[in-house]
Image (cartoon, rainbow, N blue to C red; front, side):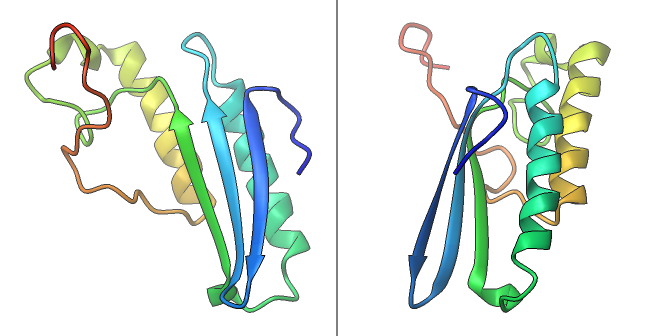
Length: 119
Protein backbone atom coordinates (compact mmCIF):
# COMPACT_ATOMS: atom_id res chain seq x y z
CA UNK A 1 0.00 0.00 0.00
CA UNK A 2 1.12 3.57 -0.59
CA UNK A 3 2.35 5.64 2.35
CA UNK A 4 3.46 9.28 2.35
CA UNK A 5 6.87 8.51 3.89
CA UNK A 6 9.65 6.10 3.04
CA UNK A 7 9.98 5.52 6.80
CA UNK A 8 6.86 3.33 6.77
CA UNK A 9 6.18 0.22 4.71
CA UNK A 10 2.59 -0.98 4.62
CA UNK A 11 1.30 -4.32 3.40
CA UNK A 12 -2.18 -5.75 3.53
CA UNK A 13 -2.93 -9.45 3.83
CA UNK A 14 -6.35 -10.95 3.15
CA UNK A 15 -7.62 -14.32 4.30
CA UNK A 16 -10.86 -16.05 5.27
CA UNK A 17 -10.35 -14.52 8.76
CA UNK A 18 -10.45 -10.97 7.39
CA UNK A 19 -7.82 -8.39 6.49
CA UNK A 20 -4.55 -7.54 8.26
CA UNK A 21 -2.73 -4.27 7.65
CA UNK A 22 0.91 -4.26 8.79
CA UNK A 23 2.72 -0.94 9.15
CA UNK A 24 6.48 -1.37 9.60
CA UNK A 25 7.66 1.92 11.10
CA UNK A 26 10.92 3.77 11.55
CA UNK A 27 10.23 6.90 13.57
CA UNK A 28 13.03 9.47 13.54
CA UNK A 29 14.46 10.49 16.93
CA UNK A 30 14.25 14.20 16.08
CA UNK A 31 10.63 14.69 15.03
CA UNK A 32 7.13 13.20 15.18
CA UNK A 33 6.24 13.47 11.48
CA UNK A 34 5.83 9.71 11.11
CA UNK A 35 3.46 9.50 14.08
CA UNK A 36 1.27 12.20 12.54
CA UNK A 37 1.28 10.44 9.17
CA UNK A 38 0.34 7.14 10.82
CA UNK A 39 -2.57 8.81 12.59
CA UNK A 40 -3.86 10.25 9.29
CA UNK A 41 -3.30 6.94 7.45
CA UNK A 42 -5.21 5.00 10.12
CA UNK A 43 -8.13 7.44 10.00
CA UNK A 44 -8.34 7.13 6.17
CA UNK A 45 -8.03 3.34 6.41
CA UNK A 46 -10.98 3.24 8.81
CA UNK A 47 -13.07 5.30 6.37
CA UNK A 48 -12.10 3.02 3.46
CA UNK A 49 -12.92 -0.13 5.43
CA UNK A 50 -16.37 0.98 6.65
CA UNK A 51 -18.15 -1.64 4.56
CA UNK A 52 -16.36 -4.49 6.33
CA UNK A 53 -17.18 -6.05 9.70
CA UNK A 54 -15.06 -4.50 12.45
CA UNK A 55 -13.89 -7.85 13.86
CA UNK A 56 -12.48 -8.79 10.45
CA UNK A 57 -10.22 -5.72 10.13
CA UNK A 58 -6.87 -5.91 11.91
CA UNK A 59 -3.97 -3.43 12.05
CA UNK A 60 -0.52 -3.74 13.57
CA UNK A 61 2.02 -0.93 13.89
CA UNK A 62 5.46 -2.38 14.53
CA UNK A 63 9.05 -1.29 14.18
CA UNK A 64 11.36 1.27 15.74
CA UNK A 65 9.45 4.19 17.20
CA UNK A 66 12.49 5.67 19.02
CA UNK A 67 10.36 6.64 21.99
CA UNK A 68 10.80 5.86 25.68
CA UNK A 69 8.22 5.80 28.46
CA UNK A 70 8.02 4.27 31.95
CA UNK A 71 5.15 2.07 30.73
CA UNK A 72 7.46 0.03 28.51
CA UNK A 73 11.04 0.85 29.58
CA UNK A 74 13.09 -0.05 32.64
CA UNK A 75 12.19 2.45 35.40
CA UNK A 76 15.79 2.38 36.65
CA UNK A 77 17.04 3.86 33.39
CA UNK A 78 15.86 7.38 34.26
CA UNK A 79 18.02 9.04 31.57
CA UNK A 80 15.28 7.95 29.18
CA UNK A 81 12.56 9.87 31.00
CA UNK A 82 13.54 13.49 30.55
CA UNK A 83 10.51 15.77 30.00
CA UNK A 84 11.18 16.19 26.27
CA UNK A 85 11.40 12.42 25.81
CA UNK A 86 8.18 11.85 27.74
CA UNK A 87 6.37 14.48 25.66
CA UNK A 88 7.41 12.69 22.47
CA UNK A 89 6.27 9.34 23.88
CA UNK A 90 2.92 10.85 24.88
CA UNK A 91 2.35 11.91 21.26
CA UNK A 92 2.80 8.28 20.20
CA UNK A 93 0.54 7.04 23.00
CA UNK A 94 -2.09 9.61 22.00
CA UNK A 95 -1.93 8.51 18.34
CA UNK A 96 -2.35 4.87 19.33
CA UNK A 97 -5.34 5.70 21.54
CA UNK A 98 -6.95 8.04 18.99
CA UNK A 99 -6.83 5.39 16.28
CA UNK A 100 -8.36 2.72 18.51
CA UNK A 101 -5.24 0.57 18.68
CA UNK A 102 -3.93 -1.12 21.83
CA UNK A 103 -0.42 -1.88 23.03
CA UNK A 104 0.14 -5.58 22.35
CA UNK A 105 2.99 -6.16 24.79
CA UNK A 106 2.50 -6.18 28.55
CA UNK A 107 4.26 -3.38 30.49
CA UNK A 108 8.00 -3.85 31.10
CA UNK A 109 8.43 -6.32 28.21
CA UNK A 110 11.93 -5.78 26.75
CA UNK A 111 11.91 -5.24 23.00
CA UNK A 112 15.65 -4.85 22.43
CA UNK A 113 18.76 -6.24 24.08
CA UNK A 114 21.98 -4.27 23.53
CA UNK A 115 24.71 -6.49 22.07
CA UNK A 116 27.44 -5.20 24.42
CA UNK A 117 25.74 -4.13 27.65
CA UNK A 118 23.03 -6.84 27.43
CA UNK A 119 20.54 -4.33 28.84
